[in-house]
Image 1 (cartoon, rainbow, N blue to C red):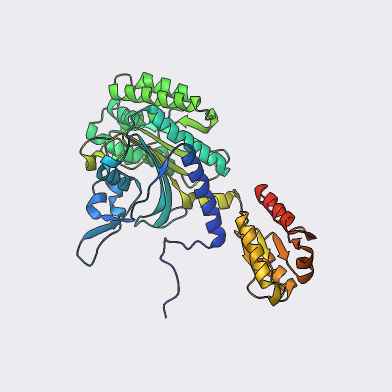
Image 2 (cartoon, helix red, strand yellow):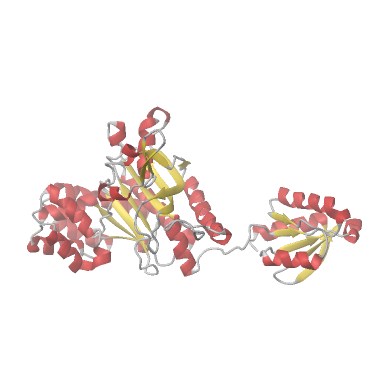
Length: 438
């Protein structure tokens, strides 16, 4: 018999993991809706031609197959291309600019590694139909707001513009076609270092002198203003790069006005982002506590929707990788670690008290208190142990004496304290503990 196992690169998420993942998703949903973003859901399966031709070198990772009717289908690679399809398909029903969020799984046929999986979940935010740098600023501000809310220490969001990298390539003497190779090489900077990038550039046909100039420019460092001032001087002969620098300055002005702390972002000319559909500002969040790569990223893609809509629709967005956020939070001991979803456990004293105990559980749930109930009456000590093993904080007992007095016994299993209270007061006590997060 074959061993019982899941597919490599695809994970089971047991309850403890799922509760942390739901905490992450609930936090991102709350922040998204506080900014007026609206939910969207698309199928995980698309026609293969919907995804093909949109991802550049990454296209080899698409899972493709034929259904019983011989139709060429694919599992979605991300939620960005489906968003582009939806925007074109339902153009008459959407009011632009449209702020959307989406959560769900995507699939890539890559080699599984730490922080990288074949099935992974993403939470996407996008602003469709606006070329304003304030749209870019809002997305980056929400990234910073979310990582702060989740408790990530010392994170920094790196920002760049694709036309700054393009300008670096052009002033170094490369053709427009050769600039694509620069994007791909620079995107590997943090993995292979300056020497590795130089070797990649030369391998792609860039002269050693041009490679050295490119590396000098992408490693400019300092405050955001210092980096942009240096780039403005070095790229002054390239009109598109000059416009990109002005655009990035406007995004930074927006971040400052939105109250994003200056230490949470900086300009990094080496940031490229590998996906070929990016056209403008790009960004990634990193933390020194996770050396495996970025936490998440995104950018502006003004032409992708046009492949479906027949006209360019400016868009900017980002994707939170739930799996990566979860893994880093586990490693750094961030976020809550509940063992259960329930706060209360209603015991069953005896057969005669079952109906009233069920009514008590219903009253607790009506008050917003998640409640487990025992399934067999009998040994109360054994039921206390079951509640404790499940991580439930409070166990409640309705015996004949308590029913006669209109009271409930509440045992705090964490503190070992026990008291008898009137029924309404008992419910109020648990509601207060819930509101205080105890």
